[in-house]
Length: 362
Image 1 (cartoon, helix red, strand yellow):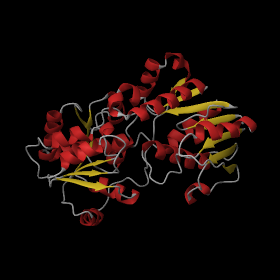
Image 2 (cartoon, one colour):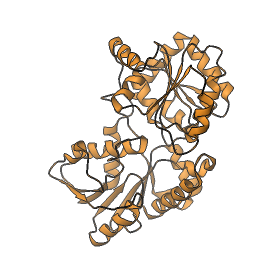
Image 3 (cartoon, rainbow, N blue to C red):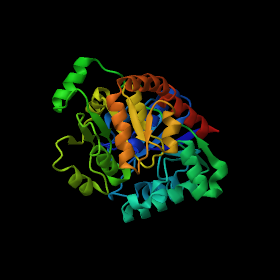
Image 4 (tube, one colour):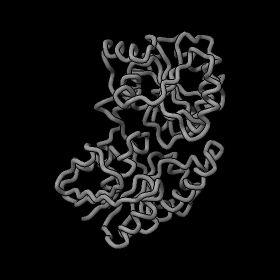
């Protein structure tokens, strides 16, 4: 069996959720399947960790000089002349495909919350997702919430959707010793206790309401640390709200190694998104032994269950009240830590990849 995989997202230097999803699945496929033949398509030179492949993997670079539409146009031309048995796409799908297509849909936030997206991004996402959902013979949804959104907006796809949960990096996200906590705090000049949000700093991630909620805290002895690159939409507004508040720290981009340490050393991890396809960061925090406060939305209940405290993402006052309750109640924090470690063990990239591969091969 010949299976085509595209590695452009997995190969991005600065990865967020969907890029890490593609990276982990590709790495797991290498480990769990030595029988089928995989053809891995990519544009720019592969990182070393991706370029190391077993004998049943063929790396095929097909170059494209433009910033967008490599998958939609350039990969289409490749597949037109060189069809395969199966094709798996972790995000976008080519206009032309020859072979059974399995595609992952992470979320439909551009439809549910269009005001959080730049108009040009909405147009692109609507085109790209619409094409993927129509072209795919099988659709993989990363949560039940995403599945229900697909059915709501694309009802014709109802009978070709399967839910397979994401995993998280079990090896690197774990509780750390005090000396490592002191190291990362000293590196970024942080106190023993801090609230942490890590991700893109943008309207889409609801960072604005998090900052507004933090400003309402009755106990602000714990600074709010915002780590991550500026997003595509809303960063300037967030930056203006933060200016002049010495208790809110904008770290900017942090390396993957520091990302892991910052989470494990945090007193509370905060995840304020108004929507998500899944919510990998809350599993990373739980697995690191850190209590989680996150948005009261269906998908985060699906992932976090009873191992998190939930707030209304549209109400800064509720965000403040829930964070304050965690700050002042050490017993509640410990209860969430214990529940979180147990909950996180139910998810892994190995499990996700095996179920995904089984679905592709059905």
